Length: 242
Image 1 (tube, rainbow, N blue to C red):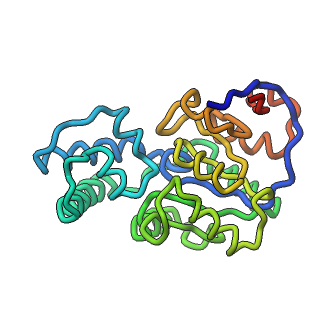
Image 2 (image 1 turned 180 degrees about the vertical axis):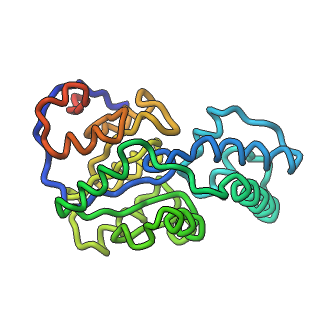
Image 3 (image 1 turned 135 degrees about the vertical axis):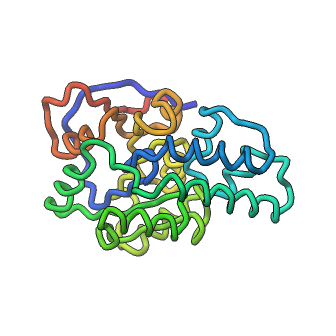
């Protein structure tokens, strides 16, 4: 396990590309995911799982998430039946798009105005991501997005490598922002700096093992750090010590 020592600094690497997870990072959708998974389990005659257990698989592709929560579903057709049931439950709860977290819209607009390039790397399906992007009027907002059903699921770094190749940006000029161990592990495997988000699916304490460059409790802290705000005394920047 890698440890970190907090220090306060306004120095920021010269990033060109910001890559965001969706659920739990930009979008406040964790509660809907948990409720939908529990409803699907009940309808499928499967055992209940705790909130923490369900939050612990958010970020994986849906088939991988189901197999982790319910390893007894060994046959692909049973996993697919559960996937369809979950999707139906989620759609019923998601008639209106889940809201963005506070500070997300303003920060993303600021990043765009500064000329930073932006992408999304998510465990959602392409259909699911396009639906929520359309709901926010963002179908053309990000330069590229990659979804778990069109590439390898997190934490495999393939989707990040595909984003870097598309954008022509080296790994040391990119920053991955996410709320799960899968996001940060994927970034580490791709050689990309990461930011740990503490308001999403997993706690900051559980994410520190992946040596994030920064830990935030509010999305606006990312903007302030990237702007080099020397007065950001609550933003925790980490320097690896082991």
